[in-house]
Every structure is written in structure tokens, then in C-alpha cells.
Length: 215
Length: 215
DNA sequence: CTGAATGGATAGCGGCACTCTCTACTATCC
DNA sequence: GGATAGTAGAGAGTGCCGCTATCCATTCAG
Image 1 (tube, chains in turn red, brown, orange, purple):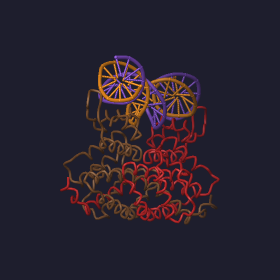
Image 2 (image 1 turned 90 degrees about the vertical axis):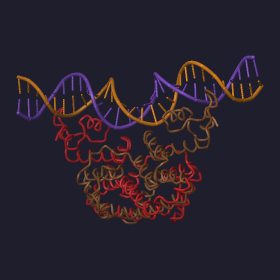
Image 3 (image 1 turned 60 degrees about the vertical axis):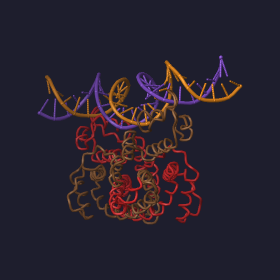
Image 4 (image 1 turned 30 degrees about the vertical axis):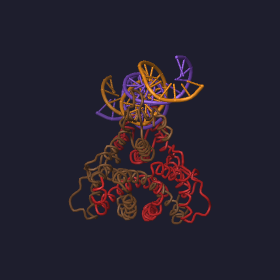
């Protein structure tokens, strides 16, 4: 198919597709003549993936490029690739880490049986966790760290479902894509469902009770 | 204190503070003379909250303004306020919803015992959920909806911890702030811990096994 | 044969979150 | 009392990002 059809089938404007081609988010089509190129289903699939990363994951174009690079790397174990993808989709914030927050993270790891001392700056994921706890402290919620354990408990159930979902995929490529899509879309879904759960639980537990007369 | 001290104690540059004042994210200080104003601890606290919303929550200035407006509204029940805050911190994406995704959401609600039919466009939260499932479908992951139930199961544990945390707060204002902070920082923490859980589970379950020889 | 579409490239645009600059003060230290 | 630093307020400017517009020569479809 040519770019016009690619545009129609994906819902992405032609100039935007050209932009993605230039930025290397989409491989060039096969040139059949100096100004005609062919695109296939793989291009369409990739284009939809890019839109998913941008729309739901909120990733920048640069991050998308990183994720795609991680996906396309052939010579790595699945486990390593999971790590690479995670790094790419977890952009570090510019927050200066509070040493106490770092300790909180290390204590959390220690509780999980991690023997060696963790360097939180080593990975974007641990950095993200430490940054979140840093900000929590700065707004007077140092006790927030106590939620880490119940969070992990709930997330174990969730992660198990995630892994089962990914394991259902047939090819290795599908596994990797499911990891990326599942992680990012999963984040959005978790966000939404958590809010729904809040409403439900708060209706039952808080109601309009405790704070009301005091105010 | 004057703006310089406010800047030092918050780590936010003076011009940025002035910008926030102009944008209405921060109430004006008390003028002691035409070009001298006084700021108190409440300003500092609010400023830190703004930075938390921006840094960890990734909210736009406009969204922060909405959240603050919801916080500052006096004449509402806690439950209503939770709803208002949730709407403000859940910016809807521009994705065109897939009717099938909407059905998925409605089926999910039905399974939770919601009798009346849900209008997903009514709330940003349900819209977000439907948008996520729409994108999942567009990249060939229609089966993703099957994860909703295990997600909810895990999130019940998490939401219980959240509510317990919020209930610990003393004043009504603290409850509201804890709701906001806990929701946004909680999102970030969940994201990070979920990734850690993935690594752990994948190391055990997937290892480097299934996909390798096939590729 | 003609009008629409294409590949390729460069320049421009709109939004956002600041940041700069300026004026007219005031507070403070020596 | 004079020098220096800080301040309120407001408009203009900046840098980045994700497109979007324009242009050209070519080529395909009817």
C-alpha cells in the first residue's frame, strides 16, 4: 500500500507519517520508483504501536524511538529486553532525591530479601520510586512509604496476571510487544480502576462522616 | 516571609513563583506596602503541593488550577470532593472510543454488580478506561479486557491501604490533601513497583525459556 | 493528457511552561 | 544619607516539542 492508504487505515495524517519516517519511528517503505514506495502490514502495525505509546503511554517521540530500538534489538535474552524496554518507558524526573527517601527504598528492598545494597540511581525504575517518595516527603507525607508493602501485595496479583497474559503470546516478537503494550496500557488501566476502587471504598468507609463536624 | 525566602525554602525560582501567582496557583501575599508582600507557611505548603502535582503527577498548569479549585471548594461533602479531584487529575485523551471497548467497560461494571447502564463519557475516569481499552484493541490486544478482573482484585488491597492512610489524617483539609497526594504519588509508586514486580516474576516464570528457540 | 497523489526536504506554527526585562518603588546596611 | 539589594507587577520573549504547511519534481490512475 502507499502512504495514503496507510494514513486512512491508521487514522494518522500523511504529514505526520512523513514526520515519523524522518524521525526513524517508522522504517522507510520499499521504493518502487523515485517517488513511489510500498508499505506493508508491518508498517501499519508499527504505526499503531507508535500511536499507542504516544496516546496512552504519554511518551515523547524520543522515548518512543528508544522503546522501538529496544524492541528491535535481536541479540538479547527476553529478560534483558524487558529491562531495556522498562528503562525506555520510565523517563526519570529531574527531582533531587532525598537521602531519607533513598533509605526508604533500600529498606523496602531489604524487606523483600534483597541482600546486596541497591543503588537507586542505577535504574530509571528505582529512581522513579525514590523520586516519588522524595516528593511525598516534601509535602509532609513521609509516612507514605508504609504503603509500599500493601502495594506490593496487590501488585503481585496484578503482575501475575500480566505475566500470564504475556506468556499467552505465540511468537517472540508478540511477547515483546505484549510486554510494552501491556505495561503502558496496564498503567493507564490501573490508574482508572484504582480511582473507581477509591470511590467504591470511600463510599463505604468514609461516607460523609469524620471530617464533617470538625470543619 | 517575602518571595525570596519562599523561593529558598521551596527550591522554586522567584520568577516561577511570580508566574504561579499570576496564574492563580498561589494566593497573593498580604501587601504591606505597594511593593512588599508577606507570605506565610500556608503559601509554602501550597507551593510544594503545586510542585508535587507538576513533578510527580505530570499535571499541566491548567489541571493544577482545577485540582486546587476542587480542594478549596468549601461546601461539598468529602465524597463529592473526591469525585471532583479525580476528574481534575484525570485529563481525558483525544482518542475516539471504540464501541467494543465501551462494551467491555460496561460488562466490567455489570460484573461488579452495577445494575444501571454506565455512560462512559460521563466521567473522565471511565473515559480513560475506555480509551485505554480502545487503544489496546487498535494494536491487536482486544483480550486485554480479561485483565480487568484480576486488576480489580489486586487494586482492592491497594485501595484499602489508600483509604486507611487517608483516614489517619486529622483535619478535613489534611484528608483532602492526602487524597490528592496519595492518588498522584500512589500512581507513580504503583508504576514503579509494578515494573519491579514484573522483573521478579518474569525472572522466575519466563526466564529465558519459551520464545528462544522459536525465534 | 490531466489532475491527484507521492517522496523528499525545509520552514513554519501553536501551545506550554517558564524566563527575561523593565519600571517604580522599599528595605537595609554602612 | 547614600549605596546596594530586594520587591511587586506586568508584558514580551524563549526554548522545546509535535506536528503542519509549502514546495518541487515525478508518477500514477482514469
